[in-house]
Length: 431
Image (cartoon, rainbow, N blue to C red; front, side):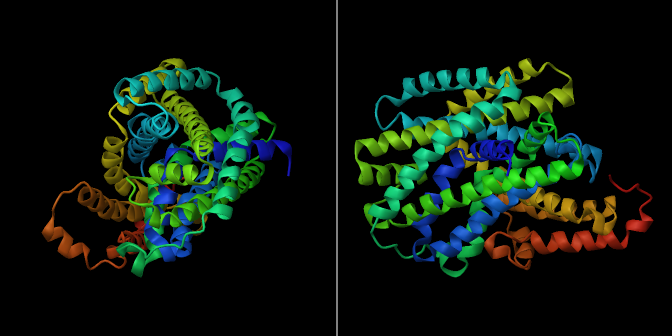
């Protein structure tokens, strides 16, 4: 495997490995208990498998993920892709990264969170903005320099966990008792990586183009190899820090995965453990934020024609303002939005690989996405706390509804109906 492929693969790992990747596997570990291995397998499907597929899906098109959405309808392509970039950008993912970095890298050492959060996010976003000004240098800065430091720190933490965390796993929580695999699958949504991959994909493709890979076949193969480097790294890290979480059941109650990791690091290494975890968190959240700002800047520059520098300045400023609302507020609002967006993104990614099988018919795309969107909208509103008893009584008949995957069968049925009417639509096939 060429050196460039490994470097770009490491960059992709660093772009993916941010706030959600740190705080959710330990939570899954402590909640799943003795059902951990089934739960983490489901988590890896959506937290690793789908993101790699999404990056590969983008390698099939010329510009960005909007082309995938255009296969449904150009207006859908614009609206849905814009929602994706806003979600993984200034509205949720970037502010979450900054606040997680603060809570795990600064707060354990210094008290007085009000003014400190303001000061930390100010410095954090100034550095993010400066690193985002020149996207062409991002591969070398992140893939060649920052990622090896990040991986080394994670390896130390994980080795310590396997050697020193000897407590038994606890009993699984209710949702992990009957269906740990599917519960882990849904938990993987919260990393945001599958939708982030729709944005990161074009960064990876452009990185290979700058290194002389020009044919579509070459881009697909190179993207797959880089994806495997990132995927293997992510799987190892998720499994390890999730396992550490599963050994912390007897250590007390924790408010989130960050608190679990902090307690585990201190148990293993004392004050050095807290410092080590701080380095991991700061690097992980910083590299992810830089990648997301660059991705948003490039996308909205193409859509609006505004200056790239002005757009990343706006993205950084909005992220800064949202970050200062605090981590809990960001998480509470993001869950319903992700519950709505994720199923649509998953169906769109899968259909990209089935595109040639149904001749790229727009009707097939429209049928699958329409019914998926209806079910996903209900799930999102329900996650937001909206009560809809009449609709719920109908939705409960859907297979897999009880485990949060009620959209799967409707997506298949909608696609099949679209396939039956593909020759009568009068619409052109998508590219």
